Length: 292
Image 1 (tube, rainbow, N blue to C red):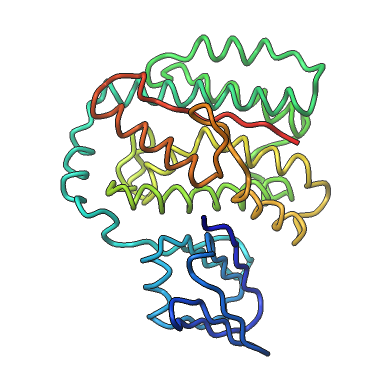
Image 2: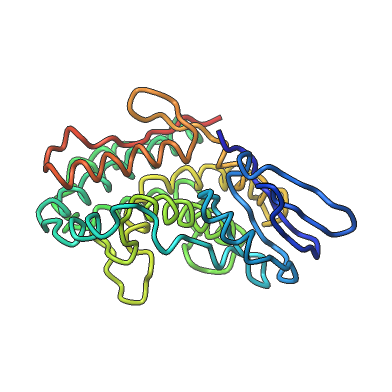
């Protein structure tokens, strides 16, 4: 089980030695690659050898490089993530519009259910009838945009009536940071399944290299929202970042069992692949969250 999240903030040199990550700065720290789940490079002055870059990718370790504002900006991924990648891509391209529309419908239903769970946790007296109606009203491909209507009610209930998604505030900075972590993790796992992240089922932006990851991660966004609600007040600081990074250690309920985040995402994506091959909705497994 990989479990460590390595966050690098000092000027350092990263190298590989005997399948260990070696971090040299004022001292030397070595960490077995087998124990690392994620590496977050926050300092732009960190130097990495080609050997360690390839080893991190080969060991399927999520590696994120932050920009000068310490926000996730780049992540490392294998070019070829699956031994039957050509076959998987051919099948992905052949996914039918009808199955994609049904899948998006189910994803949005699950996302709204998970949003409802967040509101229910933070405000036990809140009226949740809106969310139940939105779930019932989600159509194929969410043609009537129940997702958007639910999001407005949801974010106002969670962060206040003055909250506006997208403007520069500590809450939005934290949400963006957390969503970027999720996107990187989804991209890595999708790549290991042999799928192209550029080809989405709903997101189709020609400038977005991560359309498929953007699609699949929707149901997990409320997990980030809950952390931000709990820890962000007036600042987006290191304390909040550490809480968001701890999302990798969270357990998610899926397929009648609690799983660590990465394992749950793998189960979820495998279920989608099975559904897209068969057309049988019974193959789909979606996550649900408990909050504390």
